Image (cartoon, rainbow, N blue to C red; front, side, top):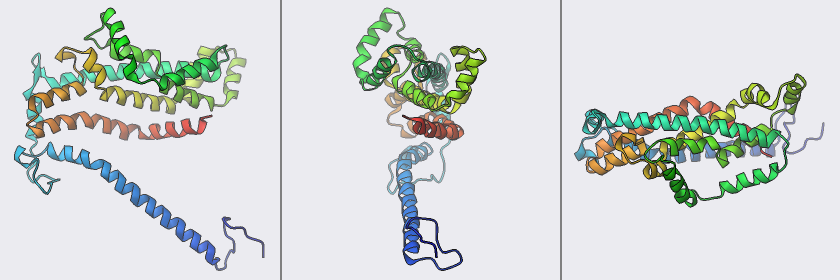
Amino acid sequence: MAQVSRGAEPLLRGGAQPSWWRSARLKARLGHVLLHVVLIVTGFTFLVPLLWVVATSLKAPNQVFTYPIQWIPREPQWVNYSSMLTLLEIAGRPALLVFVKNTVIVATAAMLGTIFSSLLVGYSLARLRWPGRSLVFGLVLAVMMLPGVVTLVPLFLIFRDLGWLDTFLPLIVPSWFGSGFFIFLMRQFLTGLPIELEEAARVDGAGSLRILLRVVAPLSKPAMATVGIFSFLGHYNEFMGPLIYLDSNSNYTLALGLRMFQGRYGDRWPIVMAASTIMIAPVIVLFFFAQKQFIRGIQLGGLAGR
């Protein structure tokens, strides 16, 4: 009989398995079951606040703080959503639609800028050879450690002198000049791409820009999708930037608009929760449609890290 080592694929074909192997296999299965139970309980715990928001948006005002909590309202108050649209108007239009339009403009423009700048700078740091490249990459990593609040005052003064206050430009333009975390993520992904594809393109006479657009960019779709999703969600939920740079109600984004709802109708919780549900819904839909690219980009970025 051949010698069998512990941990190897068994062992005695057609015969009884050793007791130690059955015990190890049983422990592994119990470990997997326990892990899934922990993940399910943890996931459900994080879902509780979201479920409370959705349930409250469908309740009457006198049902909000009843105990025990009524998770499924017996008579859903769908009128809360229609009331939310008619309670607050800006220039004769429902305020919520104005906030959604502004948020989509800002988040989409900033997302495109972030993808473009991250791909361009990440490719330069990962593939091109130029003096000071390591120093610049070190500075990019150092910028990631810098608290955002440190640059608030200098940026505000710059944007004020440029006449950009109460416009979308302070929320969009910085994204087109790169972000430390996204540049780092893209650089790590591009480092793992096969160099042979680039060399073949150079033999055919392609320059660096053409290689970037025709070879590297198509291969980088998972990383670009990850950067795009992260960037879109960040700008979609951003509160501090719009609060500092925007003044007119007609320029408010959803985060500021939701704060306006809370300020004016803070005692009408179902209305506020209906507005919160409307704000959350696009993010959840985006994640479900893009989760495949999102997870793949994270995995490939992590595997390529070096």
